[in-house]
Length: 83
Image 1 (cartoon, rainbow, N blue to C red):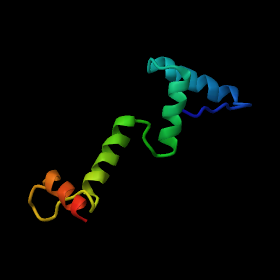
Image 2: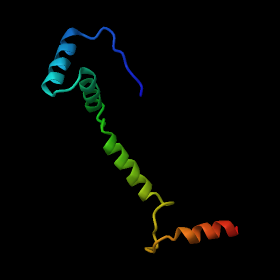
Image 3: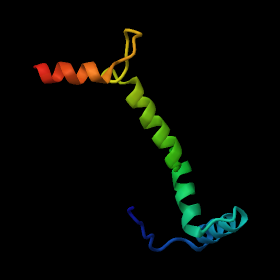
Image 4: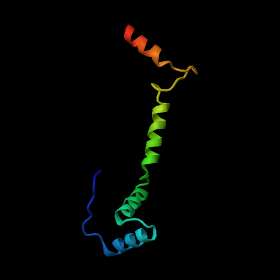
Protein backbone atom coordinates (compact mmCIF):
# COMPACT_ATOMS: atom_id res chain seq x y z
CA UNK A 1 0.00 0.00 0.00
CA UNK A 2 1.39 3.44 -0.86
CA UNK A 3 2.34 5.88 1.86
CA UNK A 4 2.33 9.65 2.04
CA UNK A 5 4.50 12.01 4.03
CA UNK A 6 3.29 15.58 4.46
CA UNK A 7 5.92 18.21 5.14
CA UNK A 8 5.31 21.60 6.69
CA UNK A 9 1.83 20.72 7.92
CA UNK A 10 0.42 23.73 9.78
CA UNK A 11 0.22 23.21 13.54
CA UNK A 12 -3.49 23.99 13.73
CA UNK A 13 -4.34 21.32 11.13
CA UNK A 14 -2.17 18.76 12.90
CA UNK A 15 -3.80 19.47 16.27
CA UNK A 16 -7.32 19.39 14.83
CA UNK A 17 -6.60 16.07 13.14
CA UNK A 18 -5.08 14.70 16.34
CA UNK A 19 -8.07 15.81 18.42
CA UNK A 20 -10.52 14.23 16.00
CA UNK A 21 -8.50 11.00 15.92
CA UNK A 22 -8.54 10.82 19.73
CA UNK A 23 -12.26 11.53 19.82
CA UNK A 24 -12.97 8.76 17.27
CA UNK A 25 -10.51 6.32 18.90
CA UNK A 26 -8.38 6.15 15.74
CA UNK A 27 -4.72 6.58 15.01
CA UNK A 28 -3.57 9.81 13.46
CA UNK A 29 -2.82 7.99 10.18
CA UNK A 30 -6.30 6.39 10.09
CA UNK A 31 -7.95 9.74 10.72
CA UNK A 32 -5.85 11.38 7.99
CA UNK A 33 -6.90 8.72 5.45
CA UNK A 34 -10.58 9.08 6.37
CA UNK A 35 -10.41 12.87 6.22
CA UNK A 36 -8.69 12.75 2.81
CA UNK A 37 -11.26 10.27 1.50
CA UNK A 38 -14.12 12.50 2.62
CA UNK A 39 -12.45 15.54 1.05
CA UNK A 40 -12.04 13.69 -2.22
CA UNK A 41 -15.64 12.46 -2.01
CA UNK A 42 -14.63 8.82 -2.16
CA UNK A 43 -14.79 5.94 0.25
CA UNK A 44 -11.94 4.37 2.12
CA UNK A 45 -13.94 1.20 2.68
CA UNK A 46 -12.54 -1.89 1.01
CA UNK A 47 -15.90 -3.63 1.47
CA UNK A 48 -17.80 -1.01 -0.51
CA UNK A 49 -15.24 -0.99 -3.34
CA UNK A 50 -15.27 -4.80 -3.48
CA UNK A 51 -19.08 -4.89 -3.51
CA UNK A 52 -19.17 -2.35 -6.34
CA UNK A 53 -16.63 -4.34 -8.37
CA UNK A 54 -18.50 -7.61 -7.88
CA UNK A 55 -21.74 -5.97 -8.98
CA UNK A 56 -20.02 -4.63 -12.11
CA UNK A 57 -18.84 -8.16 -12.90
CA UNK A 58 -22.35 -9.55 -12.44
CA UNK A 59 -23.83 -6.80 -14.63
CA UNK A 60 -21.22 -7.14 -17.38
CA UNK A 61 -22.68 -8.49 -20.65
CA UNK A 62 -20.17 -11.35 -20.76
CA UNK A 63 -21.27 -12.64 -17.36
CA UNK A 64 -24.95 -11.83 -17.33
CA UNK A 65 -27.46 -14.31 -18.68
CA UNK A 66 -30.10 -12.45 -20.66
CA UNK A 67 -31.96 -15.58 -21.79
CA UNK A 68 -33.24 -16.35 -18.31
CA UNK A 69 -31.82 -19.89 -18.47
CA UNK A 70 -29.10 -21.19 -16.24
CA UNK A 71 -25.73 -21.45 -17.93
CA UNK A 72 -24.36 -24.98 -17.86
CA UNK A 73 -20.56 -24.85 -17.50
CA UNK A 74 -20.20 -28.42 -18.79
CA UNK A 75 -21.86 -27.54 -22.09
CA UNK A 76 -19.71 -24.41 -22.42
CA UNK A 77 -16.53 -26.45 -21.92
CA UNK A 78 -17.75 -29.08 -24.38
CA UNK A 79 -18.51 -26.41 -27.02
CA UNK A 80 -15.11 -24.85 -26.50
CA UNK A 81 -13.34 -28.20 -26.93
CA UNK A 82 -15.27 -28.91 -30.13
CA UNK A 83 -14.02 -25.73 -31.82
